Amino acid sequence: MKVRLSHIVKEYGYPNVEAFYKAFHKAETAYGDYQDSLKNWKQRYGEKPQSLHDRLKSKKQDIRERELTRPYSPPNRGRSR
Image (cartoon, rainbow, N blue to C red; front, side, top):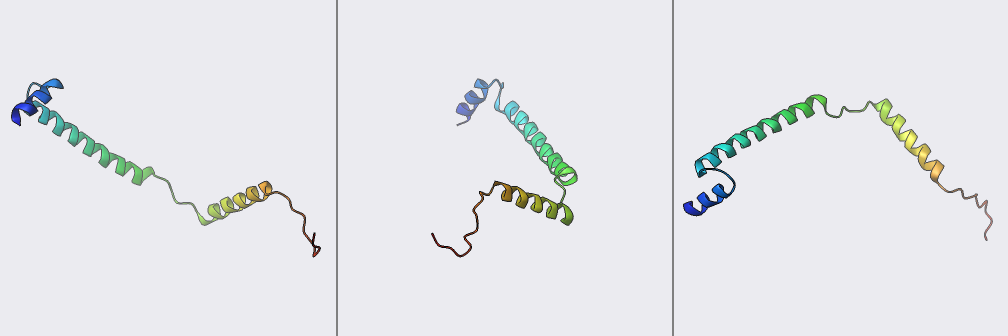
């Protein structure tokens, strides 16, 4: 197993398994730091909640747009076809 692992890491350009593990742990630490930074950024600058007034305004605009795209159908007025 150790011999096979040694051959694999040498194929990828590492002199030995220990050098590979050092690089791997360094990359793993950097990735963890990146994830922490990303989480902090999202908490600070992420999407802000909309005010009630803005949400109502947005809903009214959606309804207006939906009404404009709805095909016109004249009222039946009690007559059958």
